[in-house]
Length: 110
Image 1 (cartoon, one colour):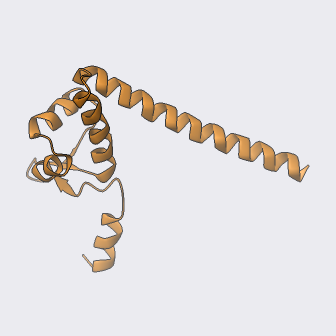
Image 2 (spheres, rainbow, N blue to C red; image 1 turned 30 degrees about the vertical axis):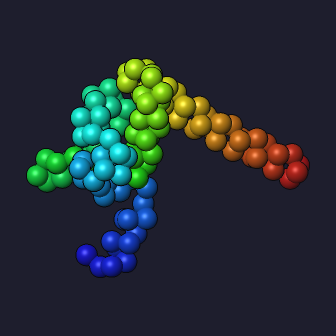
């Protein structure tokens, strides 16, 4: 693997670059918390050839948001559902904005 390939992957938010231990350390939480949000289907880490969980930066951001809610007293299952709904809303808003831009462009071109 070349340095260019490695750097490209590390810049990729979806590349599973972090072990469970490192992910827990970055988030300031326990490995058990990561397992729990995995069981709640908030995130699904990829598995290495040896079966170890690997997390991406995107997954760490999602886990950090769930941790924030749990720290505020929200039960973990509810926190996971909130984060899923927030993520879905953000995606719907992005799509809506794209449609508005396309409609505006269509009006200008007409």
